[in-house]
Length: 638
Image 1 (cartoon, rainbow, N blue to C red):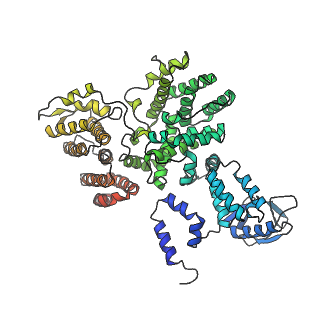
Image 2 (cartoon, rainbow, N blue to C red):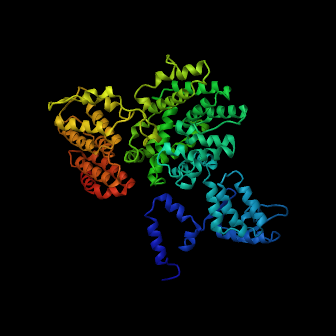
Image 3 (cartoon, rainbow, N blue to C red):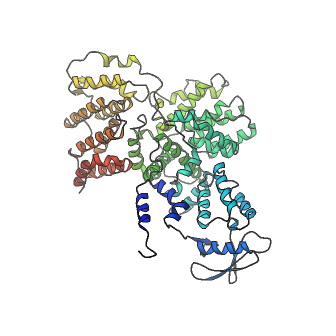
């Protein structure tokens, strides 16, 4: 083996690293320990001036070390294109200067390369002053700095660390917007460390309720302690439900400071932050009464927005969430994490992007943002149903989002109704007149869970009077499909029991899957989708299996859509009745093979195969069970 050839251990390590999610690969490859052990070294170029001065990192750092050892000296270097230059530090200055002929370019100070511990610590303090690093992170870096000058890799590691701060993200987003072709990876970083800084640490929480009871309070307090305005601006990015805004405490803040912040949110905030601010403001209104007109303006703007237009803020909000969540799925940043946690991060990052789009005040095409990652978002959300069965991808749309936000305001208003003053705000929130929010939050749509509540249990049991028809004895004659209407329409609103699901499954068997449909051609799809939701929400594999037979019967009778993607949607929702991975994979693989073997055209086969491939990338275990379906679709796609 020659000197330049990698060792067997290095080849094996790099090969094994490729088996991990991208976010893990990136984080591991960046660690000095991994680079040192497996001989992975990077020698990037630094550009200064108008990027017409370029120097290799190894050359620059070596020269700077010599210069900081003797500041009175001048150190000769070669630029990346072979030109001669001289590096020096003028008396009384901290920043070095590069001289090339008649030209002099001052470059930033690199005090962390100094042999003087005081200079290194001073430089570290200057670099991290506004970074809000965790105390343990500061302590770890301080220990390295006290031990000696940082290595080249350690300097780059610290630089990468500081770039992954939420406070830096607005500048990064603006920079990407200014380019003719921006980078999606810059807008949605693939770094678990970044998101832990943005939304905090999940701890052992498995859903939003357990997170709200556990680590959320510590995360929110930590941010607010770092500075009221900056901290609260970050908090409300990820307060995507009343469970979290309830933790935000404004006590002790000046009325002037609170009012200033709420005016900023109203003028420059993203929609996620605005509804979170409304909830926080309603709870603090008795202490800060000057917030009332701001809250009224925010709520009336949401109430009156036409979500059907391309200029709709809610359309932009929904599209950015789809884009961000889809990208996080594509790169696997949150692989192995509960869906609610990834969606919380998507909410916060999408909110940051929306803030900068609002700040830029230019024309925005929401559909373009959505189209960039819509397939990734759609398939990831359908896969998520196995763990969080009460939130569907179709629910991320501007109309639904508007109702959800207005309903969030009504929920908090009901909590504090004894403290709400009489007047316009109270009537808006608690009244029932033409302009009230009650008129814009109809049942059942406004009562459906939000994106972070997919694992939650509906608080209210299914009304007994709505299932009377189901419980009446049935003969074996064909049954009108409308008997299932109440259960299907309210499956995501009220708490369904396995007994109800078993009752429906028994009825389907008894009537031998003969249901009489109305004249509306969409009834069969709505019925099948609704029953699939019932099966998923109640974890009823029995109902899911009966539904598969019913779908087959409808398909043969020509009473269900021939679109394979629509049939796949029904299948994936119903298969989510199986929460364990292997049974879910088996059910999905079997149902997908049935769809693939049906009479579908080439275009449908191409689209279905693309979706199935995405799904298998999300859950690689599925490949073993979906290989036959994929092969059949591959043949049809030719």
